[in-house]
Length: 473
RNA sequence: GGCCCCAUCGUCUAGAGGCCUAGGACACCACCCUCUCAAGGUGGAGGCACGGGUUCGAAUCCCGUUGGGGCUACCA
Image (cartoon, rainbow, N blue to C red; front, top):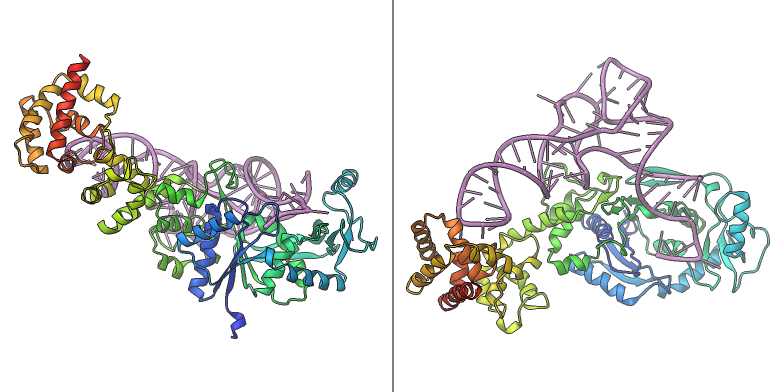
């Protein structure tokens, strides 16, 4: 085998919006194949449509791929910079008689198809021998008969009768090449061996094959069309109506490895019941031939579950590092100078067990850092105001805590005893203390939290709660 | 409308003619654990779209129907 037989795949997103999870899965499958077979992963930006493309979106795509760890070997190439290649291919196709110029307007075409009832372009300009030039689009002459077959690694043989394929435009009337042309020219030029992309491209594939063959290339690549990702209404994930941007998930506190794991299982599964796969396992076990053919719903709940598992699998140190952006940056619910890294580190293991996304962290520790300290009204009402034993308990705790060893076990024992004096289980006794000191009825373990808070602040909050009850009555 | 794709619990899936009384996971419910909430553990409910074939035997193969989706641009 020569080097030209090396596996070469490309991921070719168009920079017309946020990079979404469907694209991420396509990129992942491409990447997995390359990693196992030792091939080359090429990144190509499909920006032939100058109107809709934006460099900012390209940066977003690059950032997201990098964050996910899907590194590429060549590129990013921009189709907008490869115009000479497309022009040369068009010249070649003119010479071989595959093309003709067309000056039909959309309206004229629609008017004619309305009468004949056969949709698509009717070949009106085929024999008019118009000279190419501005104002005239260039069309590819599709054979009137015969069948074009797509050999698809995922779907098998898919046949298209040539008579159902219209003479499609490959160069706009303003001279710009169209995607269908650029993609084929680039794939030939880049010696792509596997075209792995979403199913929505399947209908245009016979056109690509026709073009490919017309350009005299005997090296047709292998195709694999992946099922689309859908929303709860079973429609293709859309940048407009669904939350699908990879960077949204990053900002919400999803881990890239969790997202990758989840995405990998959307349309493929290993040969046993495992669901947690390392990237290494994905690489060695993933097979294009095993990819499902039906659309998959992108389920955030399930993603969150995976993310929780990954978070719990982090070491203390890793967890703290990953959490940093969420407790110090824009996500924090407190000014930077109120944050105490050591206190956070002490609480980190307790937080890690309770969250599914890193974005949930601030809520758990705002009682430590937020200024001023705020108590949830409903919780205060229920656990303190409407509990006639709340004040005695708070008072007793305050007195005992002022002289106690300020350690979790001690604090717990004390509260347990106080509760027993009122014939109360610890579960109920701790409720009023929790609300008074942490501001909510649910959260991190109470006694560790009090220690983090410190004796002085704990006593102050207990006093404040007792006073607040007096003021309320 | 035309062309194409798809069809196992609500969701993601296992299932390559007998291993299926259809397995796992998320979500849901119950219980256990427990200072709250989680996490964890145990158990439960829940599915082969329908109709014809083929076969001794079909979730698995074939045909049809129905349903869903994609494409149908001088977008990608």
